[in-house]
Each structure stands twice: as structure tokens, then as C-alpha cells.
Length: 93
Image (cartoon, rainbow, N blue to C red; front, side):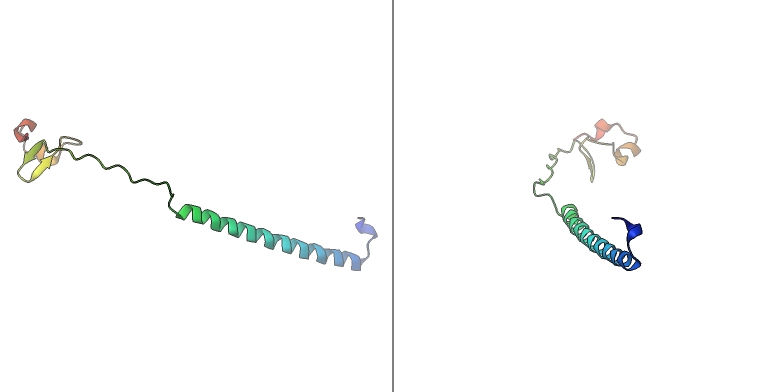
């Protein structure tokens, strides 16, 4: 297609066709992207069907007690056991 040999009317008509075609393609692409975004949003917000509840930790027996305070001996030593200055053995159950 030789643009130099076309008349002004032909060039204007070609311009209008290009604008219309471009507009249609942009609208179609926007529709595709919108439906893809909806699909991805549904994937992100939905819970996976294969999810399992996390296993419960086993109940541990109380090993140390000071009145109403209890400790299983697992984890960080509680403040009540540190403050009194007694040995931990004095609280053993």
C-alpha cells in the first residue's frame, strides 16, 4: 500500500478504519483481561479444597505447680518460677 499515491479522502477513510479497528481490539482485550482478573480473584479468595486442619498438639501433663500457676516444663521458663529464687525442683508435682 503506497500512502503517497492515495488521495486525502482515501487517507482519511483509512485513518477512520484504523481507529475503529484499534478501538475494537482494545475493547476486546480489556474484556479478556477483566475476565482473567475475575478468575484470578476467585482463585485467591477461595479456600483450597484440599486443606486439612492442622494437627492438635498433644496435651502435656503439668510438671511444676505453684498454687494457681502451672507449667508443663516445655517452652520458656515462666516468670513465677524465676521470681521466687527457689529451685525448680521445689515446684515439681
